Every structure is written in C-alpha cells, then in structure tokens.
Amino acid sequence: MNRTGFLKNVLGFGLLSTLGCRMDSSKAESTNLTMADSIPDKAATDELRKAIVAAWNRSEMMTMTTVKQMPPKFFTFKYTDKAMTFSEQWRHCVIYTCGQLAGRTGITNPYEGIKLPVQMPKEDVINELENMYAFVRQSIKELSDEKLLSDCDLADATIPVWRLFYALENHIIHHRGQCMVYLRLNGVIPKGYYGW
Image 1 (tube, rainbow, N blue to C red):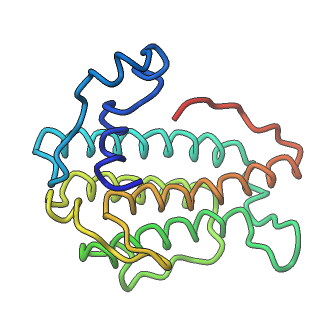
Image 2: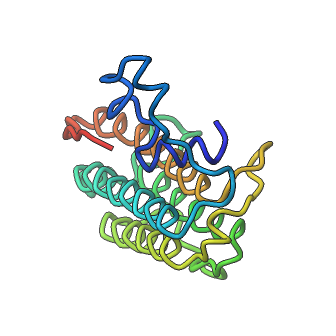
C-alpha cells in the first residue's frame, strides 16, 4: 500500500468498516473519496499525528499492564540461558526504540552516552519505559511535517518516517508477547486487554 492509500485508511477515507461494508458497488463508484497524490495538507498530517499518538498511548497502557503484573523477584527470570531476562526484554525495547527513532530522524537520543544496567529492578524498568513512551510522544508532536512525511531506510526497505513509529511499536509488541509467556511461566495469569 502506498503512502496515500495508508493515509486514506488512517483518516477514515478508505476503511471498509465505515464505508465499504454498508455500500453497494453503485454507491461506491459514485462516491468521490480520493486524495491528491501530493503531500497531505496540514489537517491530514495533524490527524495522522493524532492517530500515531493514540497508538502509542494504547501501547503504553498494554506494556505497563504486562510489566506491573510481574512480581519483582521474577524480573531476572529467563526460561533458558540464552534468552533475555524479563528486565532485559524491556531494557532492549527502551534502547532500541529510542536509538532507532533518533538515528532515523536526526533527533537527539535521550540515551546517548548512557548505559542502562543489564538487570534493573521493577521500579527502574517502569521508569525507563515511561521515559521511552514520553520521548516517542514528544517526537511525534515535534517532528516537522516535512520530516514526518519524509522517507527513511529500515531493514531492506525505504518507508516514510510516520510508518517508522508503527514499525517500532510492532517491535515492542513482539517483546511484550514474549513477556506474557514469562508471566505464565511464573504462575501469573496475564490480564486481558482489548483494542488498538
């Protein structure tokens, strides 16, 4: 999907759940919901920012729900010698997220020159995660429209910077899922959460 197609979906112009499921083909053909293939206007970019911030707010809620359930004594737990501990999983998320975002957008990395301990107690993990989420939200709000809509390299692809925010959150989802297994291996039933 190209950038314009994604923006249509983010802004609600192309979502089947709001239009397509209730429209027959004749109505769909007569409805003009196209956006120019040029850079979105200020209002569209502002809506995009709101959507990204909302996604990261939800991510923080789900992450903190998961982290706060683990008893402090199990923050050094790992299921095998080669795996990261519960604490290391979150340390990795903080360092990776801030480093990737800073390195690909040119903003200052809040962890530049700072080495977080490999193992951190529960309260320190929570504090660093709160700092990371605050940094991400601040970055979303403060990046210029031009920078937010510009391209950056990620893995073997070139993607718009706004999509980088979703890629970084996807990385957190991966580790959050692992940490939910860590909870279960220690007799903690993960609390459910729903929504995007």
